[in-house]
Image 1 (spheres, one colour):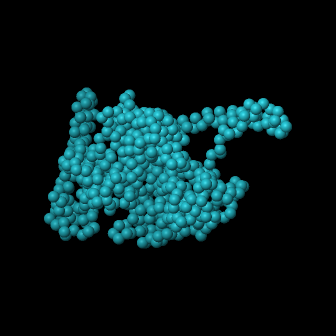
Image 2: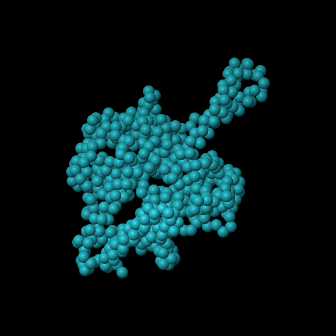
Image 3: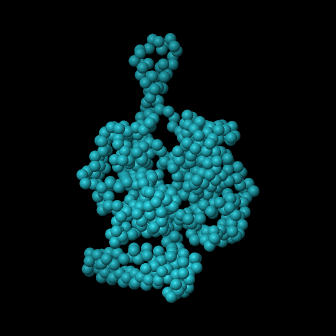
Length: 601
């Protein structure tokens, strides 16, 4: 297997932090590598060194002659004044990129909802991220480096991206290295893992699940070695503990050996032991929604929802971006009044809410961590032991030296850990978490999951992290077209319901366009709502046509390679081709009608 990129004795430091120490490792054709490690241990720096955008302090990075390397960094390099079109395709003529069905599929999937001629500067952070991801995926790369590619994507887009990356290169060709905290994504895409820690790059075979298993096995081996070392240590300490007079007569080499063992005694690692933090008593009634609806202008986000959440329920809420999940949480917590219906909340309910933007914590930005923790009770009892808020912060991975830090100066991961501690110290009995996994590394996510596993109150969770969702919730509910749907089979069932809803929407829009908008009605005569619906249907038809146009050729290729004695198989393929061609013809007719209706040339 040919090597594409090699790192030879690479070392690198940032002020006060060693990132890599004399590391030699290679990236081969066919590699699909996921990079994991704690926040701040150098995962992004490693990608920048591989991409040759950062020069290592020592050693070198060697690319094979003639390879093309693409990079999705954490921040894009777009100008605010350039259009979405230019940011994605540059000066490439439309007939070049539009003739490629793979390129059209990428554009439709990631940025089909954006104004092609709109300014990049007018986009939200999530939209800019999707534009940058589109730009990178459209390139023809031998090696693709991706730093947090799933950020700002919903579960459907993450699933699509995983499938795209699996199919992007033929087996044994190309190479992919990605940094992500999405463990489901790592398992779906990667066949090797690199753990970056303590200046080292430690390789593992397999995806994330295999990496966890191998790491546990290594830890067991290390634990056995450590137990043997501790036995020696105890014997040495016992030998030294026979009084000062006895110690002075002991051979110096024996004392030196014992002191070396003491010096090598590793510190106790920070563990997350907050799971038994007391919560307020929770009565039988928690949250009840009766015929709740919420509208923003003409858009109905929640539609006649009746739902009961009971004590101890652990509920995950699924939905596409913009489906209204955050609105639903605000209504359930009485932070937003519904447009219709009512919400009944139990008298004993005490909410603690951790939002995506961490608004509650933002109000304390100018305070130091130690001052914020000082506003809570002096001690909390966990398993019969008393802990101060400062000690609990240490359990969440904060060192005492970090406590005088201003909250506004904390990293994203530190802020999210502090926000989680902040809501738990309020001793709620209903915990509402909106994207709690953002900015957390895989190790800290595992610890948070351990905490939530045994948290005794009611839990409401919104997250695009499929692993986290399925790990800590017992029931998942999908918010689709304003309605709540139970998903007993979890996330897979959510995708099935979503696809069914999309098909029904397309059929309804098609019927509405045919009945209410005849082709002789000029575009100007449409109401704003009718025009939006027609444009939405037009875009849906365009996307469907783009996906179908290559299908007849694919089926023809299958027919040419199919066993000529398998008459039933040949007949099925011919029927499939006829069905696809009929759908294409129908969609083309509809496309022409909608284009005429909207005044599109």
